[in-house]
Image 1: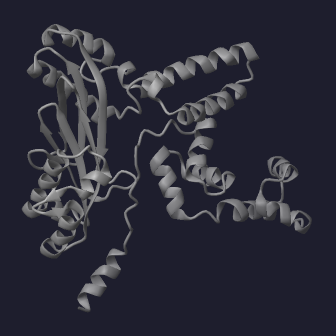
Image 2 (image 1 turned 30 degrees about the vertical axis):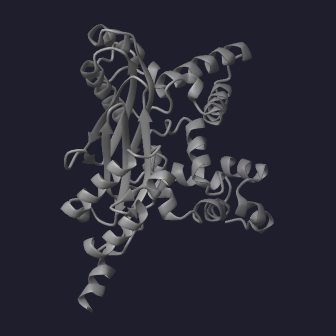
Image 3 (image 1 turned 90 degrees about the horizontal axis):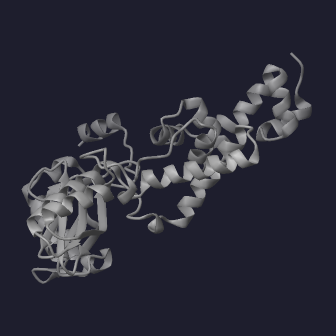
Amino acid sequence: MRDCDSCSATLRSGRDPETKRRLKVGTPLRCAFAFMKGDIMSISASLVKELRDLTGAGMMDCKAALAETNGDIDAAVDWLRAKGIAKADKKAGRTAAEGLVGVAASGNKAVVVEVNSETDFVARNDAFQDLVRKIAQAALSTDGSTEAVADAKIDGKTVTETAKDAVATIGENIGFRRSAALTVPQGVVATYIHNGVADGLGKLGVLVAIETAGDAEAANAFGRQVAMHVAAINPLALTAEDVDPAAAEREKAIFIEQARESGKPDNIIEKMIEGRMRKFYEEVVLLSQAFVINPDLTVAAALKEAEKTIGAPAKITGFARIALGEGIEKEETDFAAEVAAAAKG
């Protein structure tokens, strides 16, 4: 085997063009190993697992992506997508925490709240469920912002204080995490709970606001269907104008990279990008999405159909979706160590 001391420095980074060329044309094994060791083997297993969970890509592809992006998980997702290895991430969050999501409604307003616990066992506890209901009811008297709900009063104490008091009686860490509210001047705000464990409580809560002067019961029935759609599809925005410009630019950059790799002329590439961006908006904008209840219609078209039953013009003015534990990274524990510690008393 030839020595590779002359290129050991560049091999550690794995990004030197000559190094990459040598690897492709038959570099000695030691060089290839150095490349793996410098770029891929230093990536932690937990980071690789997280990327695999997010993208469904293979282990080695995930390792390569993380190596190319210096361990940046978001950039690694984009790298895999640009290479055609992974599709757009449909997950809104990573590892779910325990607890419950609760909804409450009154008149033309509804709220959704998330309260976390350490274990699912406590989430099934009557006292904990009662706490979540009280927090949801307290939220109705606020604008629905997380800060306002945290300061709302339950029996003379703030929501934050009430949650802290519950720790002593329920026996584990409990905390109010976030909330959202929707209001319409005239019409309804429909609610939906997915994976319900009790009335108004579950693992995912959705609100959909429909402004109309028509029949409230019919509007609420359609709004609930749209809420089920939101729970299943998780749209990013109500309209194309509401899509975060940064998110749209990120998608466009990925599409440009993919189109360039096709080797087609610039005029064709431009049309490809336009088509893919149009498809992107159809997939992430609520009103443009195929309606889950009737995929032959978009949500906007389904709303027009629903107006016949509602008996008046209707408009979806907003939606809110809270899934339990979105964005919370749950601490991984060594189960064997826990058992051993418990046995020692």
